[in-house]
Amino acid sequence: MTDRFMLSRRDLLKTSAAGAALGLASAAFPIRAARAAAATVGFIYVGPKDDYGYNQAHAEGAASLKGIEGISIVEEENVPETVDVQKTMESMINLDGASLIFPTSFGYFDPHMLAMCAKFPDVQFRHCGGMWNKDKHPMNAGSYFGYIGMGQYLNGVVAGHTTKSKKLGFVAAKPIPQVLLNINSFLLGARSVDPAITCQVIFTGEWSLAVKEAEATNALVDQGADVVTCHVDSPKVVVETTAGRSAFVCGYHANQSPLAPEKYLTGAEWNWAKVYKMFVDDLIAGKPLPNFTRGGLADGFVKMSPLGPAVGEAARKQFDATLAEMMKGGFSVIKGPLKNNKGAVVATEGQAFAETAIELESMDYLVEGVVGSTA
Image 1 (cartoon, rainbow, N blue to C red):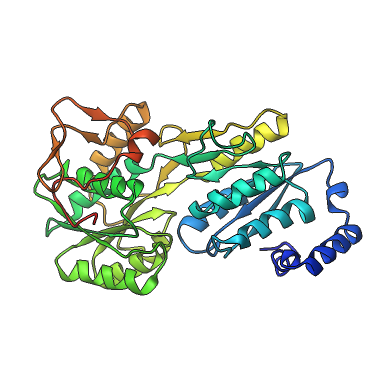
Image 2: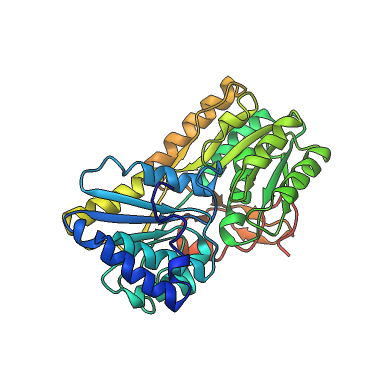
């Protein structure tokens, strides 16, 4: 972070004495008045900005705004999902004059962001992944997210052409609907190539726990998986461990190809630059900011990493053809006939489910062919 208040944002608000210090700081540095003609936008990350994952994807989106005239960007990384994030938001407002804040981590929403919405009704807050509801949440709050399951389906298409063992591996954090959708999408993409392919999943129980991620990756390769992907905050450990075992890997969140140039097949990435520019354009124009924002590949909210050197011609052709279908809109990853991995029918012949927020909430199963449990 380049902001000169990086070391004092949370400390300034920890005690009443710090509150007094904040008043002195505001008097000494009349930031809000000095920046009255400009808009300041704040970004808060739960981890480091260069994690090759979730936080880096958001930081890249924030960086894309830095050339826009009249827009000033402030950022803070490594902010835990505790009252600390409230202190960070408050300092961005009081010290930097932020009028729009993006607290990007899931646990920032309730109660932390909501508390700040009540305290600062003239400031706009937009949260990544939070399920904003107009019946119970304030109008200066909102949420945005992307439909990235289709990206994992494309990962699966390439993995399906690449695997020799017909066994794929998936390192996952927690069995919440979005993660389950990504696991299912990955296998269904692979099964569009070969219905005999299976996928084993290991849940680490944490969004960021390098030791468990390495152990899970090694266990999957030991059991025959020759292509691995993941849904954890930072795929760095999974990517490097997989490549170190001479297996192939598909990325997630951001482009991890520099970590394993020869073994990286492709990856499902967020394109937050598109989303953040939409918000900032409305802010500059003085338009009301949307409270509920969603989009997928066709909307530019999601993108794919370039195909790696190990991807063969047949894989490239199916990848391109499938991506073209997705870009037309209306593509369904979850469609019948389909059973879960316990044998129950989850979609009958002719049934198809769009990747929407409503259906994501109800995703509580793993599809047939996934070895693992949500319990």
